Image 1 (cartoon, rainbow, N blue to C red):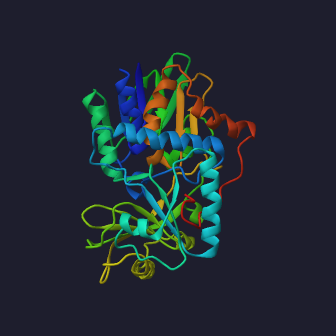
Image 2: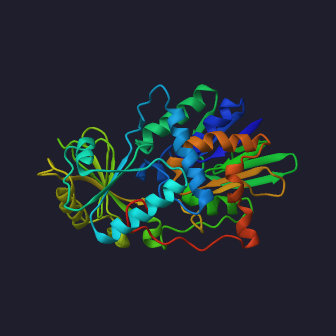
Length: 382
């Protein structure tokens, strides 16, 4: 089977690797360079602890487990150290208690822990009085570009061809196959095309005459846009994702720490360079959360842009009458990538993945898609 995968972010690379494992002849078309889009601005927190409705939770939970399977035996992209959540504000404590109860009902690994146990997990954590602590042992984080390299490397090792600088201009599908034409006139013929173009999905689908609505980061504000800060190297001890009332943190390699403050995202605009005031506010909060961060400085701050279908839920399935064009678009792409590398190829080869059944692109055509999501404001709401 010949398959063209459009998009060389982490989702496209994962799908390409899975298809190559099945013996497909894979060509990956990327309009820029691999990882230049959403992948490079991802929090890369692998979790399912506040994903609703239930089918979306089940999809994400299966994906968390798939990452553990992918990294069995070790991998330099994956850090299965869990997520420690600290709730001190009354509203956060109430919200966390309700979430824990729901997750226990769903069989998700979660446990309340003492402040002493929290300190044992993260010795430099500054523990507020009367805080609640919850540990999610199955959760993890990844370095997204390394994860991308892992998938893309596997695909290439199995014979996939990656073509950078290939901007898709037209996708023409028929009963016998599909042709993708790129800028400059080169054409690629295949049995199937899989589009994995993130926040550009609507634009690329339209070139095949298809409708897959996505939220536009230029106009949708904090639902799709958020600040991500990265500190210079620090001697602070941080081993895992740490979520608190006003700041989320994770290690970013080389002693750096990635910072996210969801309530600041209202002013995040991909067209505007973040000013120093945002970084300064993040650092003020960091000093209240983690010891050994005196003198910390922001090395980089950028606006991350989420790939968000119009109703906030994953899109996965054939979108054309000839079943030649398979569309994948999703928030939580890093979390879902390891699972998508298994289930999307399964469907391309004629099977059906029950986990993907609730997420078909046809829901937009038949009016069953729900309303747009509201912006996240508390830890775990991504």
